Amino acid sequence: MKYFWIQLLLIAGSVSMALMFIRTWSQAKNRAWKRIAFSVFVIVNVYAVLRPTDVTWLAHQLGVGRGTDLVLYVMVLAMGFLTLNTFLRFRSLEKKITDLARTVALSEGARHNDERLGSTAPASDAGASVDAHADADSDSVKA
Image (cartoon, rainbow, N blue to C red; front, side):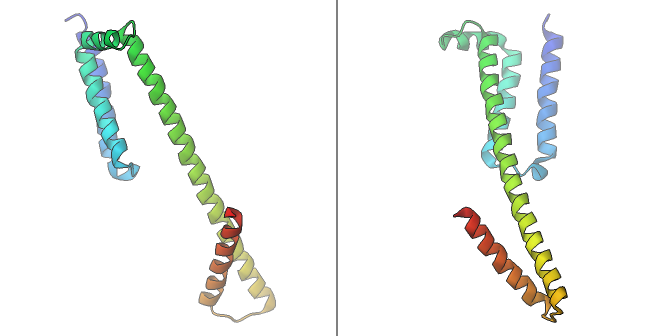
């Protein structure tokens, strides 16, 4: 009973994280394995809060001195995973933004070139040539 308040606080934190994750489920566009991993994390977290002696027993079985040390090691690994995941996501977004900026620049350049030359080509033809230029440019960047 002496640990009741801290257990209540920790479980409330876990449940609030789960609710926030579920509420933004459609917005987050997470892959299924991330959803499953997060759900398992919350369940294990609640179990560890309710049964800290089991965590200590598991730590001893794995050759770690204390349950808190085991939890710390797992959290360091989880933080490393989250950092790497965030880095890769930002790098992907930067590439998409760069590709988008190139496409817009080519489109604007073609439009200004058509205006300067007084071309009366339909907009759909100009858009097709811009797409062809964008594809050729992205192919040369990949090579």
